[in-house]
Structures are given as C-alpha cells and as structure tokens.
Image (cartoon, rainbow, N blue to C red; front, side, top):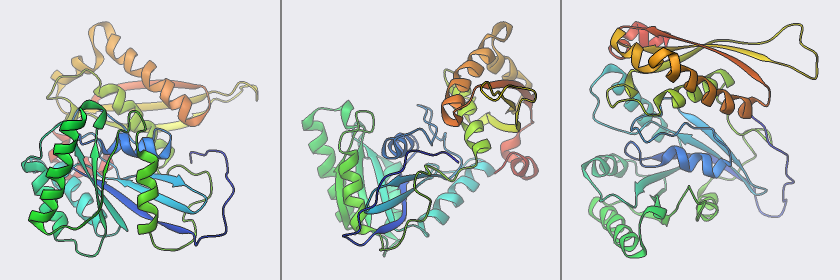
Length: 316
C-alpha cells in the first residue's frame, strides 16, 4: 500500500466520500489527470492509446472529503477478446460510481469516438456528469473557447445535463484543484473509505508490473503496445542484508504474442531491455521507497489477447 503524510480533518462541514470515474476515448488524458489529482504516479501514462488495463483507484484526501478515483480503460470498438473484456470493465464501473468525469482533449475536435461514449453516458440518468476538457496547455484561448462551446452543444444534442464543464491541464496542474472542489459537493455524505495517507488500493505487485509495462511501451512500434503484458512472478526482500541497506528482489516476465516481437523488446545486444529495466527500476524504487534489484525476462505467449485461458493467467 502506498502512503503519504497524514493531514488533520476539519469537523465543521459534513464529510463527503465517494467514487469518481474518468471516462473518455483512449489517450484523452485520464491517467495523467488521475496522477495529478492524487499527487503521485498511480496510473501508467503513455502516448499510445489503450494503455490502461486495470481499474486503478487513486485516492485524494481532503480535510472535508475523500475522492476515490477510478481510472478505466478507454471505451473503444473491440477487435479482440481482450478489447471486449476492457469495455465490460468500463460499463460495470460506470454503473457503480457517484460521479462521472468525461475527458475530452482540448487539442482535438469532438469525433465519432467521443460521440459514441457520450451516447452511452446519456443512458446513465442518475449519476452526475462533469465534462473535463483536458490538455488545455496544448491550445490557445480561442481554440479552448471553441472546444468548451462544442462540449456544451454535445450535451444539449444528447440530453446530457453537465453538472460542470471544466478546462484543465494535468501537466501544469492548472485547475486540477478547482476540479476537485467542484466534484466534492456531488459526492454523498459519509466517512472516509480508506485510511488517511493511502494513495491507491492497487496491490503493489500490479503497480510494479504496470511501471515495467509503461517503460516497455516507450518508443516501440505501433503494432506492439497491445501485445505486451507484464507479470511480476515474485517480490522478496534479499536475505542476509543489513537493516540499513535492504534490497528487494523483483522477478518479472514481459510477455509478447509472437517470436518476431522478442527482438524488438530486447533490442540490439539486449540494449532496449536494459533501458526498460533501468527506467522502470527508478519508478519502482520511488513507489516502494526501497532499493530494488530487477530481474526481467521476455517470453512468448502466442496470441494471448484472443485466448481466454491465457487472458486469465495474465490477470485479465
């Protein structure tokens, strides 16, 4: 469990707590926004679409409220069994949260993917919906104004009443605090759902696997991202180490679908795999707060995205 320093609670206003789900087409900035609100990396980010596969819960602590952020995969037209399962995860999550935040990037016109999601959202009547225009740092004020009007119009066309329309930039932390302020009143009254200081309920092993996958995704060719899965086989403290110099042994396997992809992940003379190891190790050490020895191997799991048995084995 990841922790941060404790804060004092205010007793004046009623405390609110609940689940908030960020939705949007792939690469709309949902994971980056989750990390910005939590204040630490709990969701992997990549410029590749469809990188989120697990529902990551990031937890935002305020004296008057606790927001549990549910980060879902981007809803998309599925081409594989994995794709269908990811879409099922999204719809199940939508039905169970207190507030839905619909992310639409400021630098891209509203397209068929956004409309597809908006139509699905229109069918969810009771849950308050906030439209979040993300990546505002990439556009000028005129383009941003056009996008805000377009988002308002989209709601009118489909009969969605936005509780708020908020422009944010997760990169510069612009208006992210305001977004939290606007979400809090929409949450039900209730006690904190997680202990003060917890930042996520993701098991550490899952988060470590995601950090390795994020590093493996950097700079790979287009056909590879969906083919990569990572399983952490074991995480054990190294025996016979002095108390002031601990070392955690992490053994992980990067699975790909075809033998031809192995060379891409490993790289010439193993250079790429070495790079993946050193990049992800830094993030893992920051996450766990301890020095890590990372042992990485690459294995082929033939066509795992289409094989129910292999999907189960890889945690989907």
